[in-house]
Amino acid sequence: MIRYLEPEEKQLCRPLWEEAFPEDTREFLDNYFERKMKENRVLAALDGESGGVLSMIHLNPYELVAGEQRFKADYLVACATARRVRGQGYNRELVNRLLVDLYREGAPVTFLAPAIPERYRKAGFEYVSLPPEVRLRRETPVTVRPLPRGDTELYADVALWMNRWLGERFQVYAHRDAAYVENLVMELASDDGVLEQLFLGDERIGLRAFWGRTKREQRLLYCADGSLTGEYPCSGPGIMARVVNAQAFLSGFGVNGDCPCQEMEVPLVIRDPQIKENNGLFCWRLNANGSTLRRPGASGGVGPDGAGLLVSSEALALAPGQLAAWLWGYRTLEELEPDSGIPYWCGFVRTLKGVFLDEVV
Image (cartoon, rainbow, N blue to C red; front, top):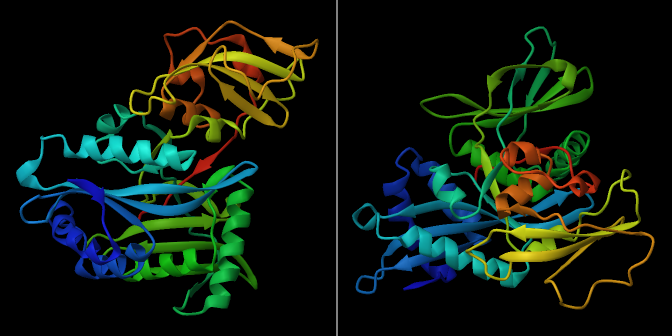
């Protein structure tokens, strides 16, 4: 039986987590089950006889900033199947079910850190973010101040600093607030880590964190660009994403300043066997304010044709993850589809530049 667990049932997931992810410490799991499980959802396949969890996916909610858009998106974590039933298709069934559910909820996108990337490419996901390889220059004369626990006012100030730092460099990232920083501090502490503030005189110029009881890793480093060098990899995961509700996702994208017309209507093919409402040919109409998507021959969302409309019959065909990777500016169409002709109108689509997703749970 596949269903979402009730709050009081979520502890049933712990034995499977401990089996699937033995590297996670008891303290890390205690923190996760105490904090994250209060706000997330868990889709699980349950044993009809024992009621135990055979397979699971946790949907952890985040608020994403994507250009001018801001929306809720679920980070899929703890995608695991009990060893005794692996290879029986439980993970595939869960992924297909949750994608349909998220589409109906109007979710623009979802994302995950894959253990087996090819498995999730088959479900429409594509890489959109990789961890940075940076460390602090040795000659940078910083003062290090660990962030104390329980200081909500300081957490809010640090969150503002993080959002400002991210916003100056990226157009797609998870929005930070005091609760986000508090969760990060507790997450780090659960694996013998600490979030450090880096000061140059009285000015905060960065944040840094190391964690790991047995293997010490740099979890994050956000710092003024002149203080960094690209030699020390962070331990954050590579992130894959996929478009879920195509209309909701595409509504934030329009024509750029190179477009010779105020609007354009072009054919877009989305290859999405998991979500039939997304799959197939669409008419994509874009202007400076955004875009609409409709099936050929369907009415609605389109004004009268005129001199200010560019119309093309050249279709672009992409999988849902490729659509996210292109429009978020992580990959060019030539990189995503090297053997396909790229329609000329693609150069008139306003894309975003810079994706930074380093969440762990």
